[in-house]
Length: 302
Ligand SMILES: NC(=O)C1=CN([C@@H]2O[C@H](COP(=O)(O)OP(=O)(O)OC[C@H]3O[C@@H](n4cnc5c(N)ncnc54)[C@H](O)[C@@H]3O)[C@@H](O)[C@H]2O)C=CC1
Ligand SMILES: O=C(O)C(=O)Cc1ccc(O)cc1
Image 1: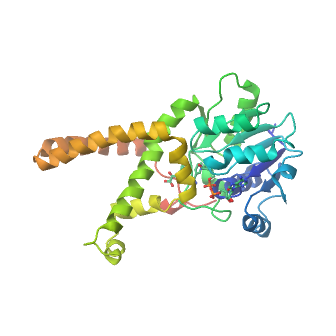
Image 2 (image 1 turned 180 degrees about the vertical axis):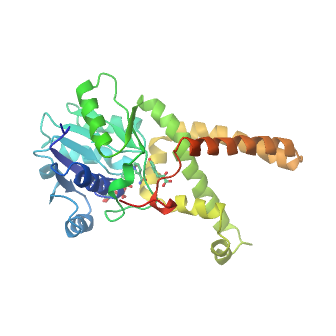
Image 3 (image 1 turned 120 degrees about the vertical axis):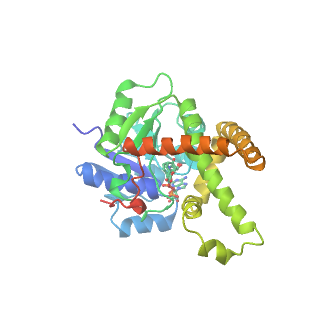
């Protein structure tokens, strides 16, 4: 049996529109209502026939929903939740897709103290944003981490888990604080490093902009893809997962300083040992079939 019959998606960008498309593909009998605060996004959603219905306000979008998914930047989760507070059916489940969990749980709980809130994070995305960037297969064979706060209703957790399995994801559950530490090192720090390296390269006076672009084969090119990620979304992630990111950044800075010393003092064996270890990590990820499934890495959208 389908876990939900009427799903409302608040925020029709990359993730919201991918969920809408995934529902059409995998759960075609489910009715999808969408809402976005940006009128031009709502107009695009209507033009591309993304949902069964695009509502004019957040409140009207949720009136008969049994699942409401907040797909807005993490800094806007509290406001989006407050906008539906007066109209949310008592038995609806509220979920989200935010990249950080602790601060989102706090903000949504403050706005919707009586709602059943089951937070989730699909660990799948691209550097693109907006309603036309989404695609139905985004979540296929990717993790979706559910982070139920203590005391969560287990049936509600199972229904949200089943929803994500139907979209093609593999579901895991994690304590919210642990999630934020794990993602700080596997996702947030890599983005910070990419933003830094691309910014540094463009600031270097002796390297002109045209040379940066001209010679951007290989490693630098990979960094520019990540550094093209949405500025609002990533500003919000760093501010909301501040403690964990600062902690991991401290560790990273120490390790970088150690590498700096190894280079300065010609300690080739130290460099070789690290690079061998990291090569083995990459190879074990590939062996486990967890290499990149994004379309720009050679896989089809559908
Ligand atoms: N982009 C990615 O690769 C991934 C993003 N996420 C998370 O998903 C969420 C959404 O990200 P994207 O879809 O990439 O962003 P996006 O920028 O493509 O879409 C966000 C949409 O939310 C709308 N919005 C903002 N405030 C709103 C409000 N108060 N009410 C209604 N609509 C509002 C915006 O107008 C925009 O259309 C974020 O929390 C992000 O951390 C999770 C996994 C991957
Ligand atoms: O495009 C990439 O490389 C990503 O890392 C996408 C992504 C961004 C944010 C998330 O919370 C999860 C996945």
